[in-house]
Image 1 (cartoon, rainbow, N blue to C red):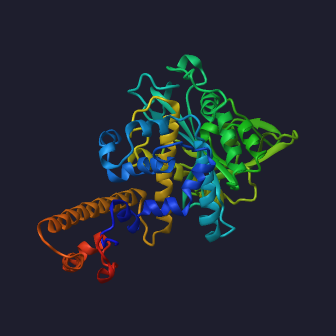
Image 2 (cartoon, rainbow, N blue to C red; image 1 turned 135 degrees about the horizontal axis):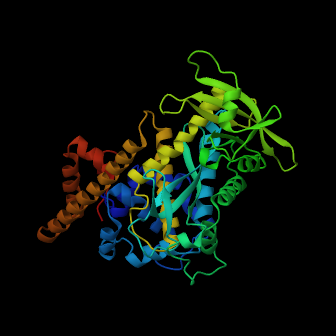
Image 3 (cartoon, rainbow, N blue to C red; image 1 turned 120 degrees about the horizontal axis):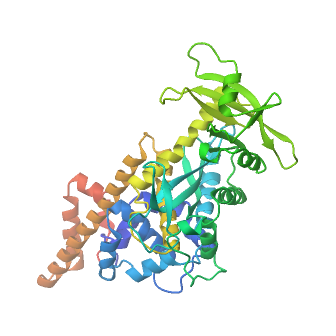
Length: 470
């Protein structure tokens, strides 16, 4: 006979949880299976993934939660850390397939074909400044504090249609120079595994890793017309190489004497080039523009590009320079398209401030950091999709707190269920009562609950008179 009060796991299924909807809608379990996630016994990889995924929304600490794992039906510490430390799981493939599926099945069918989709490349500090024995830990430059700290450079490739940003791939870069690496590669790692390949990738030049990420994103069907990046990657050799991937480049330029641009047969630095151009009068946003040549493609042909000099109202400099290899774009379209690059800055801020990037636990293996970073990225993807589908505009921070509130409601429902279960057992123990009479007693109690409690408990839609107790 079926109880009107579902057990602990059925309560979660009855609730319209954003997390459950997201994971089931996009087939996360199947994607994990195709990315070499395998376990012979115990909790499945999907359940372990979901357990870690939910931690930040429930406001729980991983260490404290694992202390009560065996008693509360949660996985034990060893199971969680074996999952995170596995060097056989292909987290890169998992994230690429997930983003590709969302783009093709959810975003593109409802998006105009004329919209300019872009790929965005940038790096951010992955700080482990208090660590000493983390695998491949290195001294990296913090460009905000202008000092060296312990950690990694998190090189990230994202996709955006101007409305939604999705992080499609990343690499935690150590240092190419061995003297800057504080710890080496674990010698026990099988060199045939995906984990070892990720480690070798982390000590390559960032520009080489950049093209590995770009190539893999295109192989998994993540298409865009433009690649956006800031002045840290704006070198002629890189721009020409990106063109070989059938992508146009829109980037910020930095003024340096080492980079020259060909204009009317002569080579100029960026600053000298600006002085040669005729400026627009008044307070125009675009001060000047010109078509230059920046290098040669694979067939030794010069690569043309348009440079815009834009008035800078926020800094001491008088102008900023943007470059576009798409000569058909107007000045306004170049500026508007490059503005989409700000999405990745919002992404970095959200993952670090709200989603516990590099803060949730202190794993020492390189695999554990890759695994946890991927899970954090998936949390962001869920918030980004919720933000896209919401009828009213919300910041991702507000959506984060709304998701936390919803999962707290689930905990409230479980507590209420436990109270009624104890009440039911106590009545049966001390009173001689039939199941039908006990059914009527519980139904009458639930019917008398205030409407707001029924709403939180999801009991208003249950046909109480037709339900039966076990």
